[in-house]
Image 1 (cartoon, rainbow, N blue to C red):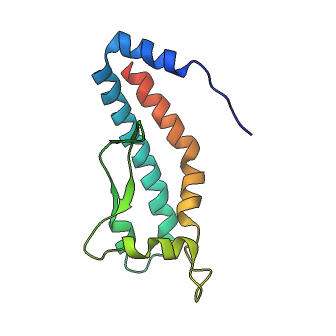
Image 2 (tube, rainbow, N blue to C red):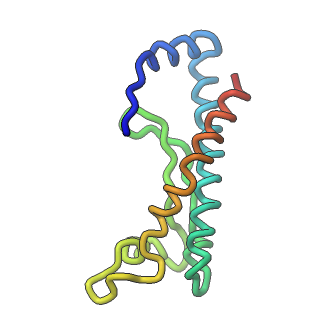
Length: 130
C-alpha cells in the first residue's frame, strides 16, 4: 500500500510564514524528541524479554535532533561503558554460529509496534504547538 502526498511544501511554507522558521524547527525538534521517547519505551519492552544484565537496555540513547539529507532526524543508538553497540547487530540479525538468537528482530518488532503511537505523538505535539 502506498500513499502519495502533494502540497506538503506549500503547507510547510505557509506554516513557516505564519509562525517563523525557527519556531517550526523548535516544534519539529520537540515532536521528534517525544516520538523518540515513544519508540525507546517500546524498544526497551522488546529487549526486556531476553535481557541478561540489562546493559543493552541501560545504554540506549537518544541523540539530539540533527540535519540528515535535508530533514530533521533523531538517532537511537547504544552508548555506554559496556560498549553494547558492538553486539546489537549480531543480536538483531544473528550470526553463522547462532542464526536465531533470543532477541532476533527485536528492533524491527519495536519499530512496527510503535509506528502508530509514534505518528500520533508527532501529530499531537505539532497540533499543540501551532
